[in-house]
Image (tube, rainbow, N blue to C red; front, side, top):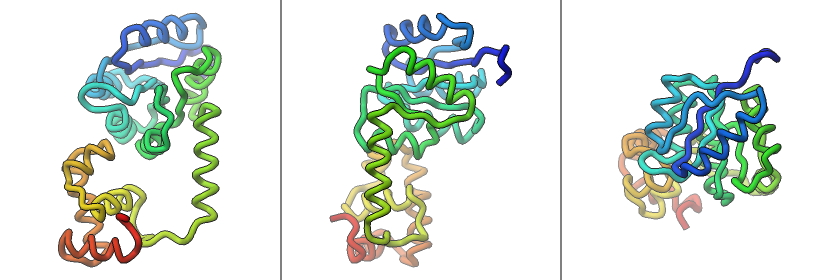
Length: 217
């Protein structure tokens, strides 16, 4: 981005008041121009692919496709579009699901105005940025992972491991898709990859092998 160009921003949130406030906040400087607004995940994906903004400010809990699924679809189709999650949810599942989906930043909705502006600017410049509370969670997570025992099935991707964990708990594809914010077709693909990598022929054998390795408990 050149110093004279404004970052093009798409706002995706189902609360009109939040969208209005964020639009006014971003318009208060010459650094940003809001090119579109979406009230649900499907609309966010459609507008992002059509408008190709520099940054999508994404809520997580929206009607239709949630923010996780919308983020994944946007970043897969347009990797150059940066997604900044601004959510009221700060639990580990939400934070890490957003990161795995391709979000470059994560702030809480209680963040200060200057912090939001700085984060949008950073994501637009290709940086990764997290609010203080989210950063603490990330540090704690990776510290625990570093000190923990070796993971079973290192040949699996992180998403496949999450899917296998839920399979081992006895969850069906629909429940797994809902838990991970993915489509059932994607879960079926993950399951097929898992069966191939674990060299098992069906779900029952995968569950047995997973539980023997300590998953699903």
